[in-house]
Image 1 (cartoon, helix red, strand yellow):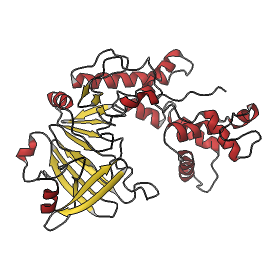
Image 2 (cartoon, one colour; image 1 turned 45 degrees about the vertical axis):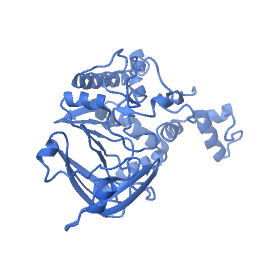
Image 3 (cartoon, one colour; image 1 turned 180 degrees about the vertical axis):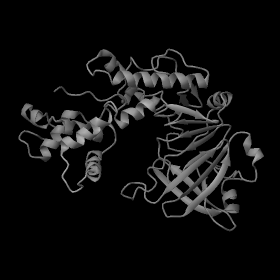
Image 4 (cartoon, helix red, strand yellow; image 1 turned 90 degrees about the vertical axis):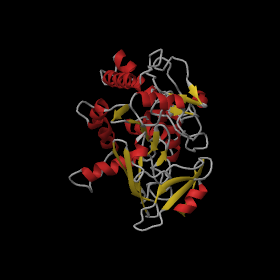
Length: 380
């Protein structure tokens, strides 16, 4: 019955649970409820339900507005009688069951990893560096006990998450050792978190939630403050190459209609296209891409928001020179503060055509140019 705290990693200006209930109460004309005003005791008793707490968690702390009703629709669709009404309690139970013993989400967490290296490619959710999170850290709720206590490492104005493991006072210098330690820490934290909720180790296990605060591979961004791609700093690329990695694949931050490939000593591939078409109901629309990786070779096939196809192949590391006939050097070429090459259009005949892109914050501009014009535009 107590006011729940704002979760770790959330902005400090996140709507509190009581303020959320006051807004709900005002919408339902409950006596004494008004948006922006203290919530009366009787209204708290009426509105403080598991369903409303879950709505607050989704809408205000996870950026998942509307997921409560989408889950209701999903539960209905999976039921023997899809036309039968689904109660609020049934929606809550569907979430709770997923993280109980044997639940699919709990099993996913137990089998999951924060970073994985496969045949020369390192996969993480967000990235290994950030230009903005650390600078704005005072705006977020953090938890000191589970955080990294070492000194920040910067390169070219970007802070690095490489080598950081929560609760460890120094960074791990060897990348593969760091990967193993980071994933072991995650599994230990998840195991503790699912113990008896009243047990001290279960509460301590909740530190895994605070890893979303910087320095973290979850919230890293290989973009500058204007959301423009940046080349990987030498300290990161040298460490990755020494560990056998010539490519980094990341998500987390939307990058337009199709993946972004940033060439370099270590190739960076940004693959989140969840806002490929902001006018579409699902913010994705018709745009979709498939990334296929075979060792040093990476192939992208897909389509843009207008239905045009894209198709290209690039190589990472030293393999670029050995595969000159297939590797497309135009992909990722250009000035990231201006126009650069985002993708090659799928076309059965010459001349090749390329999608050029310019980014400023949330604004993406695109142009299609034939190969000669594209080369000229990016100075090749």
